[in-house]
Image 1 (cartoon, helix red, strand yellow):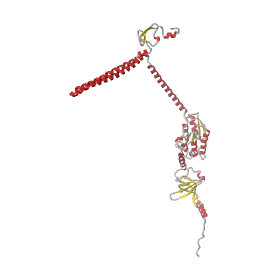
Image 2 (cartoon, rainbow, N blue to C red; image 1 turned 30 degrees about the horizontal axis):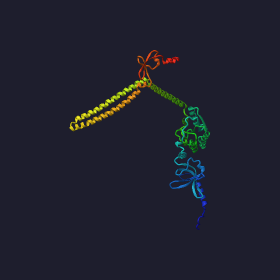
Image 3 (cartoon, rainbow, N blue to C red; image 1 turned 90 degrees about the horizontal axis):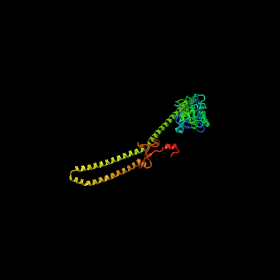
Image 4 (tube, helix red, strand yellow; image 1 turned 180 degrees about the vertical axis):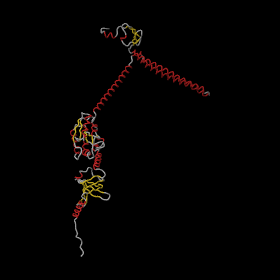
Length: 456
């Protein structure tokens, strides 16, 4: 007897979807999947919804907010992502999806990716611009330090500062420099020092370490606190090869905490040496100026000659001008005679009668022109001579005597007297006036008149 058809099991859509969900979650409760991220969407709930795809397929993925907080990087379309999670079915739509419990970028570490993403975003905001960076104070008196109170960094900063300038005050705002809560503590410490006030500069840093150890100084909260600081900030994180986001935002980046102290604090002994050197150079400069002034004064004093020397110089100048004038007249006349002789020879050499007759015809005219030129030239030189004579007359000793001065000389040696003490009562002196001379007997000298008030 033939058997009938197998019993039929009938599922509702909801029941079948629920059954598939159970089977999928049981079979794929812990899977790793990689693909390209696309269609990233993060609503106000904070959950992230996106698609993982490859060349031929795609699958929906969900990253709940509680898991997303642990990510160091931001999801972006186009990035290659490796996810760990479980497969489930979203029953209202019958879609299957991956609930992501861990994610990391493919080919690059999560921390490095987060570093590059934050660096690019803050750079786009202008937080790294050189124009916003402030210079360090020349002589800081009070320095705020944000670092661990037990680390080598604070010891290095204190030792270098005390060695270079013991008068500088250091205030340490102690914080944890690694761990999950370190970034918030560092940011708050920077804000507290700004609120306290009275600081010339802040040093924020720690010693070297791994990327994970230095990570608090790559957090956005620390970068924002440094950028908002009203006090110049020196970043001193790690060793010379370590660069953090804090280094880019700070006003000055120091390779080590010790180097930060050297950048901030001037060496007092070096400053004293420089001040002494500046003082020595200033004294030398003043002495040099005084020497120059003395030399100029001495030169001016020597140039102030007595009247006799002034008269002699004027007479010498007059003689020179007179000689130059006579020589110029002689040379001018020689030139005219030479020109006339050249014309005469030219006429003699041109033998044809017509040229001779033409030359004879031109000769009176040339003679007239020559005479006119000579008269003009002589008149010109006469005026020059008169002006020179006038100048010489103004400089003449007689002109000086004409203004009431006189020249007194010992008789009969005729040596010029410059002081009253050079003669004695009873001696005879010659007094040269503008018109004539006087022979006078000395009765009293000016010195005697001053010493004897009753004298005449």
